[in-house]
Length: 436
Image 1 (spheres, helix red, strand yellow):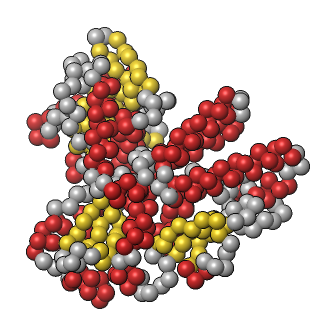
Image 2 (cartoon, helix red, strand yellow):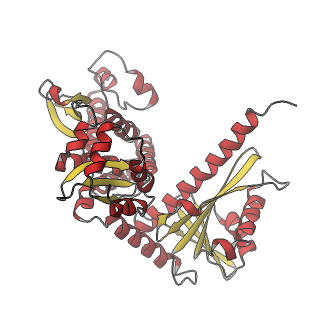
Image 3 (cartoon, one colour):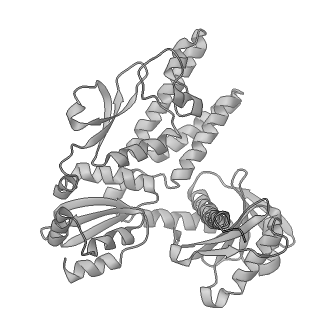
């Protein structure tokens, strides 16, 4: 590996994305994905590499990366790039195993199947996605998507499958076929086929289109007073938001490698426009989001996650262990954490905006510690509402679908995750502590 390539690897970002190793002619020889591009690429600098990996690294002359917004997008984009470039070492590093494909069958109730290349002609397939050189990758994709769009992998039988009992095959084709009411049976089949259609679009990277479709169906179901269906769609929407907050086609990354930076710029700009109506903010370069986690007052912890120019920077994250007397009091805990954060403005840096997870009471607690003029907002989970407190009164803005909502949801979810991870660590540590 050349010194220039080694230096380029060490300068990579710590974001999710896809990396492409190229030889001296510029030909792509390997495509990989990572939750942390820098960490993954640095692993190739090790002296302890497998024979074939060492061969690939020895002829690598350059590396390109494409930053994406989530692990799911990295998985989808990796498959698309492997299909596009057919890199030599993606095949060789898998010990010449035949690639895995995700297939949608041509049946009354299309099934989702995982098949090898040699099996493509065995199944009657409506649609094929892949190749995925790792069966684990294909399974991870389906495991995540199935929570959003339940589907069947079994042939028709006489009773509901086991996955129907946990909501992963809903409506189950077996149960649809048992339905005696023709009208209801027809409606259930339509729901199943819509799930398959959305799954196909998701695997194609059309995430924005799918999200809009779900929102439209949810509103229509509610208008028809079909509240059960509306609730199922709402849950699907939340699951979709959980695994990705950036809804752009994966092929958009191929034509614009800077797409993620463009997305983040739109998100920060949109949030700045909203916040600017209520607060005096010149810029939103550094945004911090805080969350408190505890179980019935035990082992309370808090998290601070940081976004620079809209992109999470894990090097700046902080955990707080709360030691006050009122451990079950979220308001007291928020005051404690924000007060400690304020004490570090000089050495940690001062944020342009603070977001606290919660509504009026949590925001009031933060403002009490920060001062009335410091830019801070609350994020109430119900309808994703921003809460402001200025000139002695509260104001609320319900966020619609768009860049600002994507940004604050992503930060809030990351703050939840980070706070819970520390909380669980403390609980686990206490459970294994020997009795005195």
